[in-house]
Amino acid sequence: MVKTKTCVFISGAGSNFFALLKRSNNYNFPIKINLVISDNPRAKGLLIARKMGIPFKIFKTKGLIHEVKILKFLKEKKISLILLAGFMKILSKRFIKKFGKDIINIHPSLLPKFKGLNTYHKVLSNNEVKTGCTIHFVNEKLDSGQIILQKKFYINKKDNVTSLKRKTQRLEHKSYPEAVIKIFRK
Ligand code: GAR
Picture 1 (cartoon, rainbow, N blue to C red):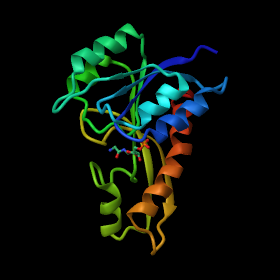
Picture 2 (tube, protein in one colour):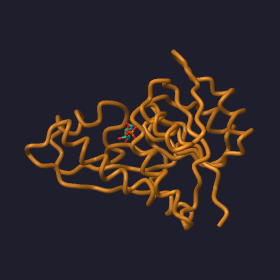
Picture 3 (cartoon, rainbow, N blue to C red):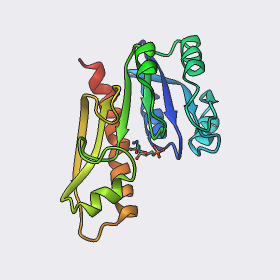
């Protein structure tokens, strides 16, 4: 099977990247992770990339990311799909348009609820009954693109930010690969 050349963008732990990587080793999984890009040289996910032999590149930046350089690099590597997995920078409208192919993101809430940062805190302070994760196409508005897949669970009264994060991420690790399969079934 010809697999789609994919780049995963990370800024932190890279647990979703790792979940995707494990699934992508499966013969029938539609993508191959050819590259990891990070804006953060200290992202723990880069250690996973190094250990697993996945090429990675750091585009270190204080403010805006070097979008022109990134686009050039993606083109050189013939990347046709971007998966954002805990990438904490916002991609510009221009970047999205110039890349011209699918960009997908995972967010730790039931969008359209609780876009942006500090999601677990917002979920808890809003006394939500359920929460979960959303995988969606990226458009020019933050956390607002078309939803591909959403998974939910009930919040326990004893849940705090730590337990909610653990439960949400456990669900994310199953859901992101599932969402990838779903977009290739279209
Ligand atoms: C994930 O939980 C993802 O949903 C979240 O960052 C985490 C990254 O974890 N993304 C966002 O909040 C984007 N707005 P990971 O580095 O272990 O995959």
